[in-house]
Amino acid sequence: MKALQDATKNSCGESYNDLLARTYQNLLDQGKSCTDSAALAEEVKNTVDKTETVFFDDEVMEFFEENELIDPCSGEKISDMLKNEACANQKTLDMEALEEKLDGFDYIINNISNPRINCLWKKLMNSNNNVICEQISYYEGKTELNLKIFSQDLNGQNAITWFDDRDGQPYISFDEGISTKCDIEIIKTMIHESVHAGILNIVKGTHAAGWGINDVPELKNYYDNYSLWHHEYMAGAYFEELVSALKQYFGNEYTDLVYEAIMWKGLHNTTAYRALPQSKRNQIENIWDQFNNSTTCKKSCL
Image 1 (cartoon, rainbow, N blue to C red):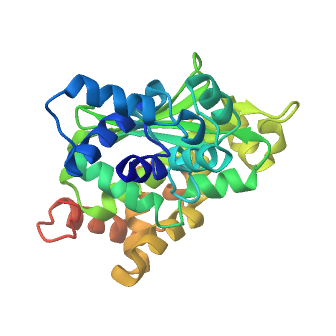
Image 2 (cartoon, rainbow, N blue to C red):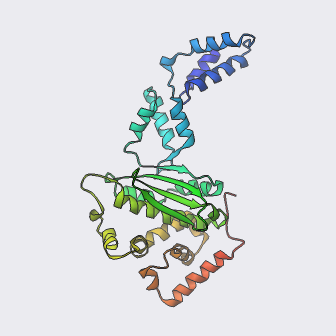
Image 3 (cartoon, one colour):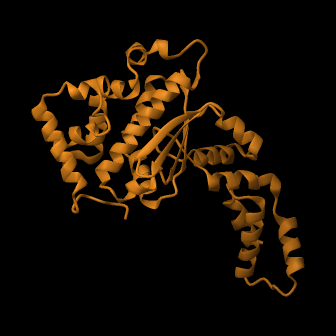
């Protein structure tokens, strides 16, 4: 019964039903008669040794298929990490066990339906320079982040980020329309919204006992003194990090002035932007116009 041995040997991560189907096909490939399919199916069922094979609850497999969970720092699929752990420990993973494993994990659930936006998001996540990871690393052990992202029609608004008090997690939704924009504009939007999500998580998310925004004095200053405090903080205290993240992603493809100009877009109603010399603002806004009217800017993931 070599076919069965081969089938069960590498079955970790499959549901029991999927394993049976694959084993059945392996037997047919080995020339086993299919004239009595019921008897063959029974033989497969009786031969597979459940005690030596790690099986995954079908509900868990369906969850993994519908929800792509990503580690915000490594870009690795958390589903793969959990599967590998279960396989190594020879322990079945059901939904109850999965929920226990996910408790305490920082992760992003990627449900972006637009192919180009999804492709660029994954490239950003795999670039090892995303700002969510930097914030998590800084507040490691203090906050728990489970960010959910998707795409939808937002009637021309590039993206929105909010915090849902019902499940205690931040959300980002990207407008389907940004999929026609240049790569640098889309990546900028992703970085910008990621910081919004990180800020919301600090203010409203799951924290270690006794820890909160009061323990982040620089952010607390903007929180107390500005109505548009998210953008004021990003422009006044975090702007260099934003520009650096954009530059690290694209390298020497653009000038420093272009990186700054693109990142200022969306932060132009802030005190820090208004404090720039008029000549600098003119340069920045000319660059915005160039990208708005560009038909030759870089567009990947098409």
